[in-house]
Amino acid sequence: MNETTMDTSATRELAGANPRTRLVDVRTPGEFAAERIPGSHNVPLELLREHSSELASAHEDPVVLVCASGTRAEQARELLESAGITQARVLRGGLAGWRKDGGAIASGSVERGSGTWSMERQVRLVAGSLVLLGVVGSVFHRPLKWLAGFVGAGLTFAAVSDTCAMARLLELLPHNRAPRNQTSELLAALTDRHPPAGSGS
Image (cartoon, rainbow, N blue to C red; front, side):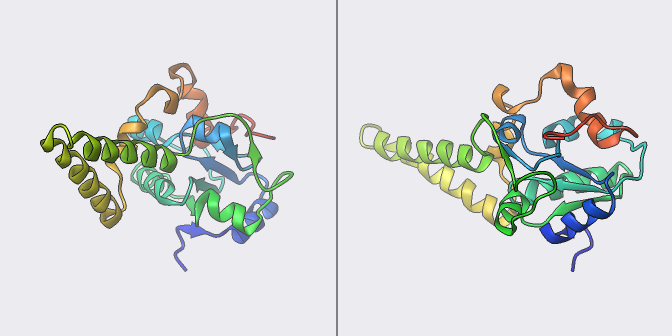
């Protein structure tokens, strides 16, 4: 078993044994608002990238990083490790695995609210729209067929490399970004000795 990851059962046991365990969700604020693990904190991955040189931990509390499937959480873990924060682990399978395994720390498996689509769904919408535009548009202007080919090549590379340039670009849109005036508060949930209360706490 990879010691940098934890499944739902192990995460639940850890939180039960140590109430100071921090669940840190690195998805976008909109995704977090739509669905989240009760008691978790939102510290978007893009925010961690922007402030990676400033990251330092004032505590030794266990940290479990969460995203939709585990990919962004692993990227966050690597950023934190580079900054000297080594107590972070990744929730294996992400929120999807948590739902599937019926994890519950507070009341219920997940909390739902109103927010934006998941990043995966946003990528599917944009990629699908571009492919459709390229195919239909090529009827009138043949070179547009290359737009569909370009998107297909990008998706293939994303699958092989387990990265997604389109998701990185979509993270920069206003509805996917954290308000600038909340930067310190969001980062505090990860780094401060006494974090603000998590969602649903």
